[in-house]
Length: 247
Image (tube, one colour):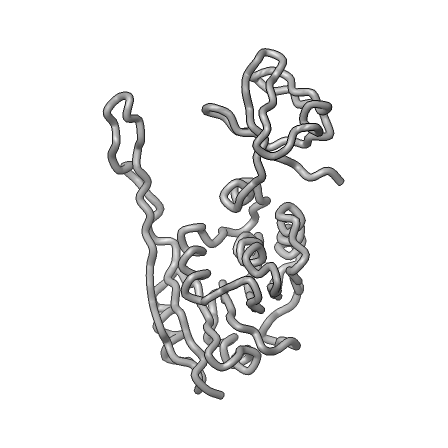
């Protein structure tokens, strides 16, 4: 099946199937042109509007995923990837797949590793698999099961828990994480964070607790406007990072 591509132009972007003629408000683009164009190449509509074909990066794909539950935002995913120490050969465990954005973003990084993600809801798992296909990833395994029943694989380098009761999951998965490995819990309430810390099993210790806030700026220098927006992405969740120091 022909993958979709992204066309960008001044003030507009189009997510299209190049195997079909594209009829837009800017004019028609013939499939025959699109199929011959390489990334970075120029295409024009029949009215002369210019677009460039580009490979989609993570922010582009993130805008086009199918969403059911709330996702972990990109601002938080940056910290998760950094502080979990995720790298190309990492083997990552996840619980609470949801729509699968975090699964896919981590999967893009672990090109020589893998992501194993547990999702208890069948409808969420189905959507997450569709989003994995959108990203074109082959190193992700989504398991439609309750992680509290146990994990078969071992020697994970890190884990991400996006569920409301991580204190019930940590004793189950602790043996599946390598010594020195890290776990991140993503929680909306500080009460949940406190309960998680108080109930940490032996061998696990809290390493870092952060909250990210993002303020976008208005940028219209032609009108001398360069200032913060009146609203931003403020509290989304607390990121508690835990490290395995022993068995």
